Length: 505
Figure (cartoon, rainbow, N blue to C red):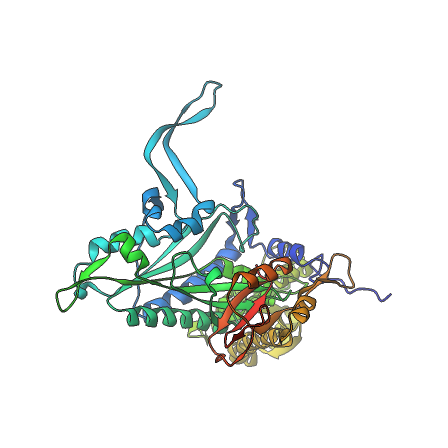
């Protein structure tokens, strides 16, 4: 048996994908478990990625006419009760505050006291509390549209948690808009889906399928839910952003009314849309390898790390060279911003330091020692391909933005090929069953299953019952695939509806 190559992450993706994912987070120093069950502490490198995600998305929201605001963390329980489908969808995930203070208990501990007249729900999502404010602000058609986004945290009481993908508390943005007409609201819903797809593909280097959710997968209370779906390296789907057309459901529940141009009272048409820190999980599972995290250059907290290599007698010269190199690199533009460059002069062994930055996914590592200075050069390692190459200093400074562009494109192309290679069309249900039935891989614990399945379907209970044993769900009805006549793979009924089906996170 051939000796397996040594990797920084153990187990490898093939050996145990879920555990590999956890080990990548640990090795990259992205986050840590907190003392609170199901919650996490996001560490500086992980926060740096989220900050860059926030920055890009925030600019995109503002470019499309939206403003930021902030709404309360606590929501009166009666607000959720006004929209029956909404409360049913979130009831089992709600954290509830029932008391407002603590008092000494009989055994020396503390006990809750001061019962609230009405329980408060810790924000699982904000449609109801924001709707109550819109009802106050909207009187006339001249008050519309309202285009507001908030960056916030939410709480959903998850039973099984996984860092970044599904945690009790997570960070996100939620946009909430109100419009005078149905057409405006639908246009907004589509526009924000395009923003998310643009961000996923051009910043995260993650190809996505834009589509509409089936009735059973819609956001509770929505008329239509649009989604972007991405394939992870284990061929499971990850819902990576959603945009909801809420119709007049929430405006009627919250009383968001306005007087139109003819003096008639009308209910507003509303939307909501959001992405969360789950995108960091998507980034990890789209690009990382068995040596650790791989970060697309547009989102990397440091795009280039300079690694000085020196002895005490050469430290001053090497550091002077690195500082001037850093300044010249930072004067270069990439993606409309200055390059983000860091010097790591910590007093640890060079090999260990190099591996730390590999595991963190830094796009370019640049080693600088006395011999490089003599030649007026640098020695560069690429994270995406593992390629290492010497460059003339001036050549590298000029070429650095192009190298980062190459890495960004390589990551996207690699992820797209994975999706294309693992997407198949089916006409028979038995073939679908075989596709999604797990097969054991070569390594103990490895599990191989199908990726994305495309087939005609009728959205009905029979479909859901047949999918349940396979642990497969309808991910979306693709927007770029015009319906054509066919036969439902689950019922045999004629239909022109085509869907993407997959196992999912």
